[in-house]
Length: 262
Length: 263
Image (cartoon, rainbow over all chains, first blue to last red; front, side, top):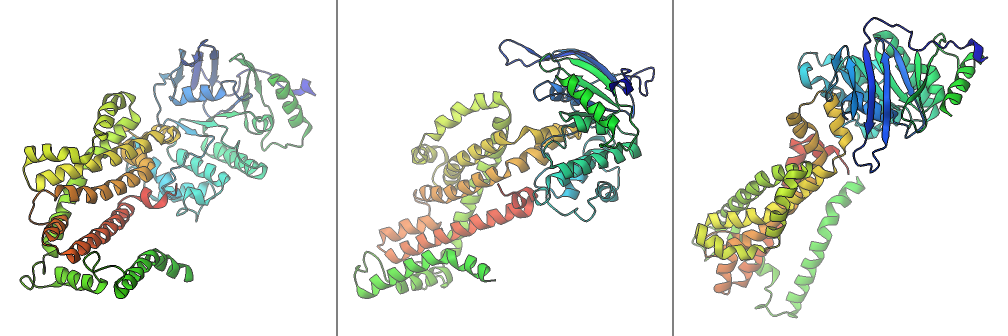
């Protein structure tokens, strides 16, 4: 089966200048006495419109990398370029959907999404009707006046998605956003994400530890090593969408990724 | 509906029991009137003090003046404490350098009982409103500062990160994210501060000011009018309680985060 798997690193949608370019990024947390690197000379690129998964076990440094790209951490060395411009500090061109619920608990769903509109350079530019359009987009029309604590975890993550999509970020950074959801909500959320990704041609970098999730979503998977802080392997998922989880080839990809994780 | 009625009546139960007990001991003569006057005497004294026409008796109709004088002192002192305590608490809670700078001084001053400031305040500000306002502000500052600091320090960083990635500037982040997150603690601090403000009003009005709710109690003590003393005490309790409710309602009205967060 494995012979069917195409393995051409980073060939999907490549243009001359990469959309996102990460080169030689290393990171060590200052408070760790031995200064052991969490990330070690990470280099990869993401093309515009591509959906790339960072796959790895917990503690492998994949979330640290996402935090660096989001601008929350400054890497010890190396550089990250988005459309040729170096990343410095957080900004609405690189929106994050967090693993935990990060909606503002004192704002209704509508106000949470509108909050994004009132921030930074977008303030007052888009009409408020946009908010309801985005609630609708993630299938939550009619829930605008609810508070975050009144809805389920799956719905919260959909609101979090609407809140960042309304900013039209250049790249969407997702840090195991569906990790805490039950199986049904997770599948529904994955489907919704794929729909939105297709409709909006949104570039997405998606962190996960779930092999099935990676094969379901990704154009390309970057597999992190267990302790090395490096990308062990890069695998293009050459499956037609929508992907059939029951198919032989899907299972073959899953097996292949599991091997890579070892 | 039954629940609503219970919610209104339940807080009144203890005061009602106390009143009944008071009535019983007064009626039976268990406690002599020079120690504790009969409730009806108090009622008459209170009615005269609040609604009476000036000139009808020694204390008739003086309530409004006294109340206005005391309320002004409390509100001025409380406002001063809030204006200093909340911003300084937010800064200390978020910026380690600021906390290092001020925490030793603040906690040192906190150890000084408010009454120690009285002689100094009288020398600095003389007898009158300034001394009282100073004492009230001095006392109310600490609970407001400390609670705001705790609220700001405990604010989960993920919400600041969420704000930052949405492009929120630092200044707007303070008002739109940090203050709402710290709101439950800020409200706790303000309520404690306001309560202490009323307590320290008593201290400030000890010093020979002519009007004020506490001044009237001191005045009545010298004239042996125990009924007026009890009226003054009850009024301070009632007004303190009403102020606390009003503060809470005002915060809920002004800040979404005050009403919607149950933490």
